[in-house]
Image 1 (tube, rainbow, N blue to C red):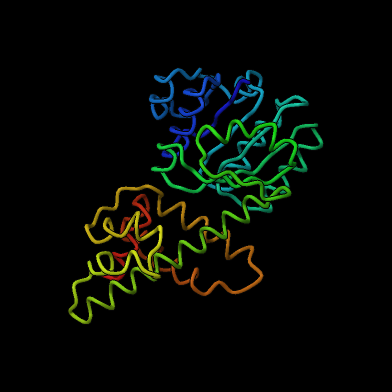
Image 2 (cartoon, one colour):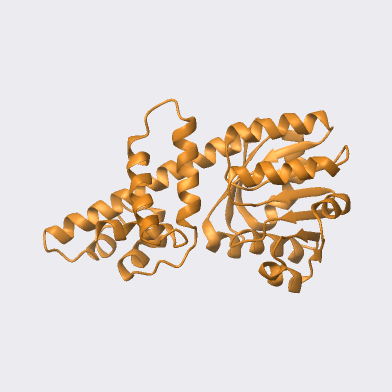
Length: 279
């Protein structure tokens, strides 16, 4: 099976490299070739255009930044794709856009899966991502071997768009969790209590969480190296508020806090930098 890969960034690069390690023939395209050097060094085949990549591949995978990028890339993919091929979008994007791409694919006799992932750069590097897949179940089963190269927990979520809906729910939970950690930090600080007790005393109790495990110490140490960019998290949370039927009060609060941080130059820092808003 020949895999085409578009979007070899902080998470896309290690995902593509896991495919190569598992003996898939991987073809890559990038506007800035220097950014995918690690994937090329691993053995990927460089394609000069999206047309070349689509024609050389059985399955076309995308992992880009924003829904606008997804739409732009798939407009080009659909110009050249032929019946019987499969597209998989790993970008966290709009569920409604995922549904639209699936319908456009059907008109070309092409199957499109939405398969956003969670687990950050650490999960991508370690091959322990959670993969949330929406689309036709038989196509999911046919391509599951791809997900297994970099995913530890792989879930079929139902029809097209459902993978995106579940991923957005994940981002809603993370946002409120990060907010809670930051408020707890500020509460202890105001009471002149060592803030690090949030980790030393609370992480193994009922208030413990994956976010506290992964990012708690980084937050307190001022280590904001990105495992997941602030700019991409804001994008995800805005998708949630734009498509939600209920007011997402906590999410809206977190968006505004991150927007303040963006104004202060934190756009390409990791999501754990939310603590800076409270300091």
